[in-house]
Length: 243
Image (tube, rainbow, N blue to C red; front, side, top):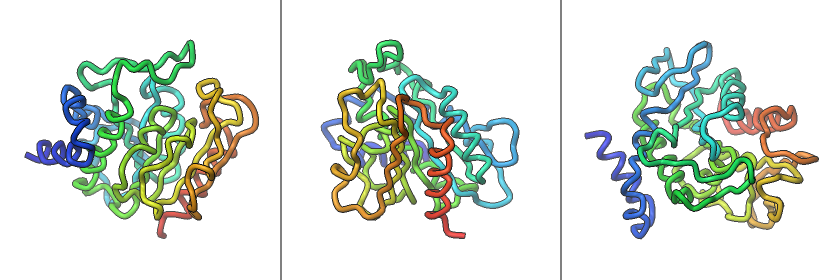
């Protein structure tokens, strides 16, 4: 019953025209197969197995186009050490889900999968599920994504996230979350996946006074190994978490 209600919540949160295209993708599986990092726990868990003595702030982390890899795992370890439960839904657990990018040719969207709608649907479903979990501090659920996952973060309608962190993605699509939602964008001045794109977020975000952009000097795509990126994320979370 809960699964059906949450899935209905996802579909109604998206435009009706997109529902038919997404119908063949069961986004609930991405949640069920999510990898969860819990502070002070060595091994990862599933969302259904997490038990904690009290609610924790949560970072819902959306992986890039190649799945949960070294970049996502490094960010998860960092965030867990900062005291946050990190939930990484696995998009590739969804039946019929294939990779939609080329990591060798640096092509972000091969148009094999409607990722611009599928990935935000995964976010919506996961957020609905998080609201039912006793281990979640409901006032402090953050959304973070890298690359294709960052696209998902920008395309997700306002769902009450305490803040949104965008890693390795452009700002040209704007952000669907409301103007009250704090934002942090981290990118390189030159990114092999977005060579023709601009990274000036302020021109896309409009009159936001709660948006922060960190441009890493040089050429790259992954951000987790950069100390300035880690510090920016830590500061953003601290500044938006009520003690």
